[in-house]
Image (spheres, helix red, strand yellow):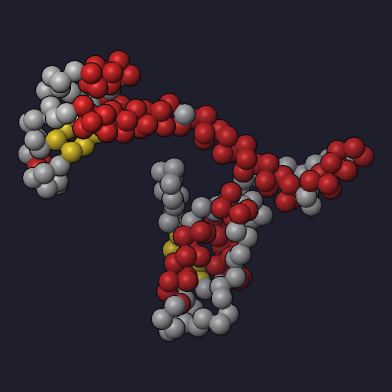
Length: 191
């Protein structure tokens, strides 16, 4: 493909870990004949280079393949961690949760769509208020608002509505759920 079709510059190097097996990586590392690699796309036809160049490419691809292998277990671990943190916060902490369990009281399981359910980011940094000393028009205002909005982008719609309307005193416009595993946009405006 030409560099115009890929929107790359004329000098590019793309690693494709999905197209390589661990065996292919081993062959690539120990062979100086590496012309037909399906897992490397680059502008230069010459992939030979020395061992150390192949070592850097190999280690990058190997790390990417390992991360792809542990993707699903890490997602599950993240959901369990998020549920556990919300279970603790909705029941008043570990001691109260343990006491409720011993006395037979039912533990409140948090609902993912409720306004009280927060992400791991929200549990690590529970601040929801904007800094009162920074007013609209101040040079720091947009930067601080961007930081808080970035943090809020990991939360669910009900939580975002309450924070934007009640805490920030802004108008909540709408919430688009464009989850790609990394972020989701929220639109709001100053009153």
